Length: 157
Image (cartoon, rainbow, N blue to C red):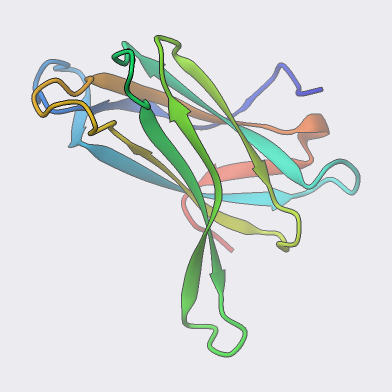
């Protein structure tokens, strides 16, 4: 079972959408945003996974459209060339409907810790231009059973 206490990784107000200025108290990013983070295993027991939780405000999608895309990428250095890094997709999920809290399960099976990740949120652009949903990304948290994994904003270590 996931702990009800989530570890805060990032908190702020980033406006995603195609109508700049409708949220005067948020940073406007346009059609997408990508947050880098480092997730490290500190527990010796527990699953090789964690759950990232995104929180939004005013997210609503039109029926019949797939929803906004969330992608979680893992960055690893190559064995032959440690200065060349590759990006692997660990999780994808669509944000649809009118919820404002989203859990994204992420498996680290086969990948050694620490994990350098990015969480990308992209506006659903299948709707006609000018009708893209505008919403605010407000929080990214990490929920790990027994706090097996801890997370921090940015790439470290």
